Image 1 (cartoon, rainbow, N blue to C red):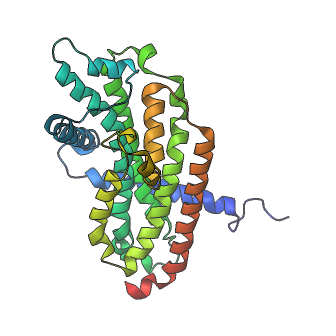
Image 2 (image 1 turned 90 degrees about the horizontal axis):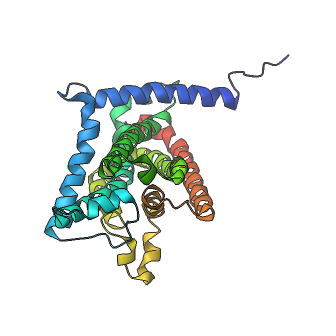
Image 3 (image 1 turned 30 degrees about the horizontal axis):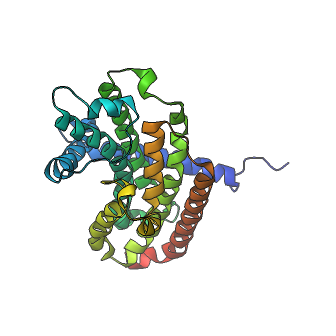
Length: 293
């Protein structure tokens, strides 16, 4: 009788892929902070420093404000203060900005590292038995860890601004946050496989990636509300995979608005198609990796 779980079955391959991804992902995270004095604390310090920098630049220097209705008590607390209303406005801007930067940092980290992940592991390319497609997935795994840590930090900031009143700050819509994130994860996987394979042949790709990542941030409502953009141009912003996720993430997190499930289904479908395309390109191009490297 043929065994149910033989080595050629897709289920066995998927389990082996997940197990290897977990092992390499954990090692990648540990290596990232190994040798530093503060170690894993940098996963908390880095997003805080980034938010502080952008808040000072855009809220203090350029006097930018978030124009949407801040109905979340934590945001109201950050906006209105008897002592310093101007400083409170900066706090409100920082909280809303933080949510967008978390998602942007995830995709930016994936794109920046993916271009050189295969080139940097050239010793594994010549090992026929090693599944190379797991390397770009490790980049996504590591970036997802940072996203989760930053999200927990954001929740702590919201609770602190709302004086730790759970009933006022936490919404039932938070249950949908993992689903809101799912399309972006598939986009990250697709980009990682695509850029990792192209990066082997086009070494200049890593040189221009910094500009592309910067353009990705300014073409999405990370630093500004989408309402500030003229309506004829808003549709172009939605070509950026970050736009829908950032807008929905903020609405779910701050205003307790559940996602538009029709839009979510469309975003998920596009993400799955792009991830499949990225995996297909990687599979086709990996045959020549050993010759190039």
